[in-house]
Image (cartoon, rainbow over all chains, first blue to last red; front, side, top):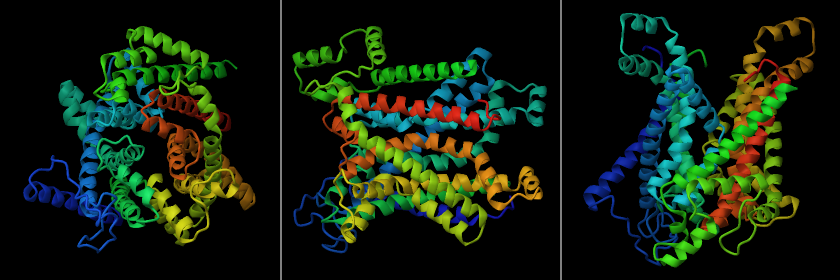
Length: 277
Length: 303
């Protein structure tokens, strides 16, 4: 692999590592210095601090509506957002690969069902279905993850189906089959490694999609945590006149993460598939 | 003709499956709508009353039949609070949403195609690189973070537009801007890439060697690009629908989005279900319409 890393990839990777470092640093700080990450973060509820501007009262980014340090709430949101989106992306991609492969390999009537299922769910307006699920399920973590997974897998399945079709027609796969390789071994040792590059590109781009979807749900009051960036933005828009810095800082932080992911994804795509660029 | 009938049947089947899926997804989701509405302290009587009101006391298959009968009649049920007709509420609130969505989609298509072709023409020059950066930024601010920033800049800093009023033309400006920025960037990128793909192809060479003018060639390329662009619009439509709804809650526009938001806040889930079903069906109808138009434009597309 002597191909040159693209500038996009370096920039995107750099931005993303900063965010990951930030999340890790916050996790370590909460876990080792404040005891536990699972214990809800209590607001100081100090009226003095309410909507404090950045660099006042010893708070770097100021405070939010409840007088909590904006930096801390923002970090909690980052950790929450990153972990949810990675869990969901890993799950949706796995389901997608399995379904896509089944749509190519399964017995014919089964194949039809998988094909139809993928096409149907793909044209579903996914975020609307997620809203529906969350409205019924109430604001629970299981509900959120269920909603995001059930609406997210068809995109991966479509790609996996196309890739599996392509790979199965290649010479070395035929060779492997001629040697008498088992179905499971075929799937894990040959199919997965050959479709992984394309899947990874889509997973990186998918993570930013999940972050946006999760925040959109949070914005509508359907998130699973008060630390969802969407929920915070929804609160920040009510005090846009008094404390514009909250909305601005939140937007920029979120945009930075999404830019990092999109740059990395685009760069990876160009890197892995030079004919596209 | 029989092909059209086949298409219509397929669309009807898809919509039927979609409605069925919505029905079952709601019933199989973790969590209980009755408990979500009433909270955990509700008495047994209240729970049974609400279950009967929502028809949740029936066995699943009878619920499904009742649901399908309602759908066939276009009946979306009654709200939990006030027992208003959901369909009537939707009719009242449809206007602003449809206006917003239609205006911003058409504007984005025009702007996006124009800028996309411009970027393609000036490949790897100033404007192309500029457009790349702009679209990267435009896609990184989801509508609920973009809209507050626009309000901050145009309404609070420059004092140009009112934030939360509805009725006059100038009130449309900010919400539409918030919707057009991301959508037109997507269309711009797609148009640019498709344009570059076509512009080097052989048939363009032939038309050029035949001595056709720049504009005539451009129009032909545009026609070839159109199905791809329409396809992107179709896929983006679900983003537009949710985007419109979120925009409405930010600018206090009395449309379907605000209705949905109120429904969510009050846990009035027949309203939520009604809005979702209505927009899903509308979305799918437009999706199939675009699919059909695409095949008319370019007979090579046969899905």
